Every structure is written in structure tokens, then in C-alpha cells.
Image (tube, rainbow, N blue to C red; front, side, top):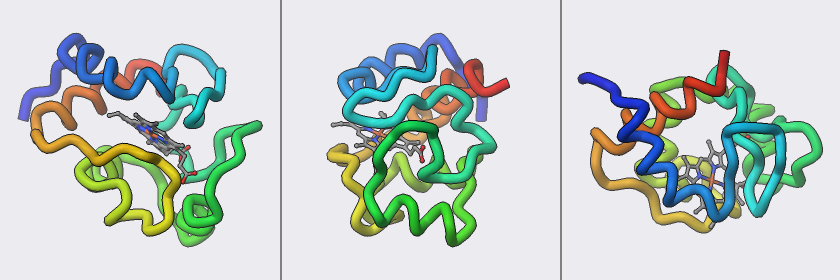
Length: 106
Ligand code: HEM
């Protein structure tokens, strides 16, 4: 499935109230800079829910597969997460927003 970072930037507009990917600033949610390849719940200086910290300690690492699952239904994947977002319904929107996030994950 083709990924389109430019389309993903538009999807990311729905995340922007709580996240930035361009720098390390934490907002309501943690910065998503460098999130691909990162252990869940470990962005410096951000106070995560106990559930997200536990998920990371249990070995959850963010990659295309785990982000796809999380973005479909955050609360189903990480029970107890404080991310107040229902999830993205469309597979292409998820693939594209991951492509966007990848640009800030070198
Ligand atoms: C956590 C992505 C929308 C609030 C996270 C994490 C990811 C993510 C990957 C885990 C980060 C980590 O482990 O370091 C996204 C994407 C969004 C989105 C791609 C849009 C499609 C939102 C929105 C809000 C939000 C709209 C606020 C209403 C949070 C919070 C956390 C979080 C509070 C921390 C969760 C916890 O500690 O349990 N998000 N998010 N996110 N996000 Fe989002």
C-alpha cells in the first residue's frame, strides 16, 4: 500500500491539538519526533499514564505495525491510555500519517 507523507500531514491536523512531530515540545500529548523505533512511553520530560509506561516496559516499540494497531483504536490496544482520541477509521489515513511521522524519525 502506497504511503503519502503529504496526505499524512493533512491527517496530522487532527493530532495537532495534542502533538507536534517537528520538535521535542510536549503538549497535552508527548512530542512524536522520533517516534518510529522508540519504546512506548519514553519521550523525555513527558508524564505518561501508568498504562503507557507499562506497555513500554512490556516491550512495546512503535513501528508501522504497532502504530497501525494503536491508531485504529488507542484504548483497545493500550488499555488505560490517557490519549483521548477515538482512532482513525481508514487504513490509508493511518498509513499516510505514519509516513508523515517517519519524516521526523531519522
Ligand atoms: C500518546 C499518536 C491524537 C493525546 C500518543 C502516542 C502516539 C500518538 C504514537 C504514544 C507516544 C509515546 O509512546 O511516546 C497520535 C496520532 C494522533 C493522535 C498520530 C492523530 C491521529 C491525539 C489527540 C490527543 C492525543 C487528538 C488529545 C486529545 C495523547 C496523549 C498521549 C498520547 C495524552 C499519552 C498517552 C498515555 O500516556 O497514555 N499519541 N495521537 N493524541 N496522545 Fe496521541
